[in-house]
Length: 206
Image 1 (cartoon, rainbow, N blue to C red):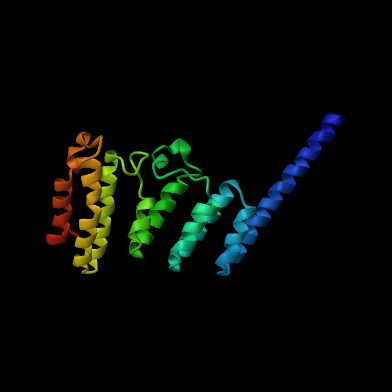
Image 2 (spheres, rainbow, N blue to C red; image 1 turned 90 degrees about the horizontal axis):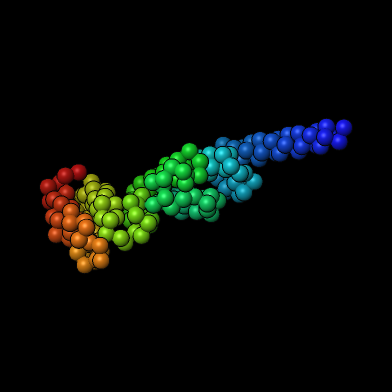
């Protein structure tokens, strides 16, 4: 009899929790669908698990759509702070929910480049190694510079593209040519990188 009573209590508690989660999700989408993004953001704190990540992703996408990239970043960093790093994204076992990090960081990266916030964009580019300044991330940094250059050149801002290349190609001089492990990555020597990236600007390879 006691066992049946305890089981009944557990069923009631679980049922109430389920109803509460459904209600919290319903309240979020009510605010979201009404365009009240600030209220929707505040309601994220009532969600957890799969609901939290699905709603956070929807809100991030909407913030980006209306041009509020900083609020999108805030949702990712503050409302879902337990996400894996841009290096850990390589390992599916560390993902929070259904590749949430991969999709969201790609959205943030693209949005930041389109907003000309290039320095912040690098924070959301996937890494091959944990230390962003390790020579082994040369391919990642090359891809990042290339994305920025193409973005600028497509807007006929070649002078800015050249300035960006001049400044950021020094990463390879420091971390590859003169870095402790740089000799292991000869394809990303300063001269090779500059030559390849320079061709994008000169030959209009975009």
